[in-house]
Length: 529
Image (cartoon, rainbow, N blue to C red):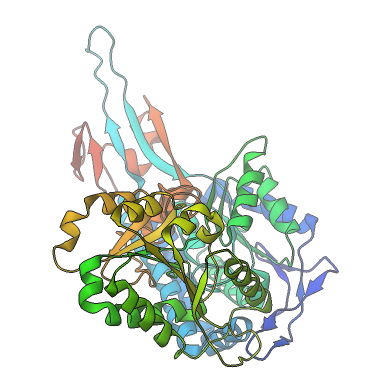
């Protein structure tokens, strides 16, 4: 079932002679499959096919796109346990995580299917003509969202299913009417090929145009660069490091026709511990966060890498308990030796910074590619003066900043880079007197959690998974939930068009029965003829 080849539309292709293998971090050994890297000619062919597919796919009805998305979900399910086995062999993640991520992937596809089938997402707006208006007659204007064009999606290392081949970015772009070319992540390319085969089967079953989806292998950066620079590509979806996301963003900006790059990048997800909460339940909070810091070996984009509090007996008790509890957690496997190596390097760099004190680190020997968790602490002034400490250490690492007072706490929050999430731990009504702290945090994050942990992202329309740079390249959008479709569309107006030539979404009779704004009023009723 795993050929190691590329999907160029509906064709399996392996024109190149550059190959690579994926790695099983749990066994510390290469996997058996040999993957063939896409050539420049194959990249060109995939982009040209996507451009041709866009001409018809962008006009495909919401009902037909919904059938396609549901068929993708069904074909992924049909891959059965073999998909989970390959997923585990390429990620080192346990079976429960594999099953959970597959369930999330299927749910995302079906959510988007429901969303585009309902049709309201196009935000149709109609302002009818007023030819008698003086001194200038008013023309008829009708606006709706349309698909941007072919989209390149980069697979994410830490989510081989939910943020990769048929993950959230791909589902959103296909729902919008955009053909997708996936640059498969080299750490889980065999998993990617299996999912790609499911997408292609679904496309054939539902009569989607050839080129609506392609999947390209690459162990380096060349294929990704070619895709982003190709003039037929109109947008990019990326989840990964700040370095990688920023490189793609800069590359896209240098094009003759710049295109948007929707990149989700680094985040340390600050936790603000308010004094009363610490006084009353420091030990329980610490136990909760020992588990959150180590969950998934710290390889979630919402891992709590920064904990902030004002010096007090409560903060001291929290620190002592956190140090005791975190070393009780058995270390687990990271996704790849490269990721484990990067964790060790960034951790060592953080620990070398002046004023950083290690609170606890796992004391025993660990298996290859397993990460020793570490918690540290630093004074508020030291943290403010050393921006190296503000950067993400991807893995089970967290730093507790001990502020002198609430004024310094507010300053620390305001000096942070943009983050995906922030969390406030508060006793009842305590937060009512901390408006400045809440406002400062809101200015730095995309989502604030109250008395919880940031790890875990609910997939629903109200989720905002994005934040100020460098958490994402555009804080106006979410990368999770059906509203992420808005990244891959643009508003388009029809002026003075005959009714019969308009898209169904904008016709007087409203044949789709969708909600529209007509002369300032929201309605799903037909317009008076």
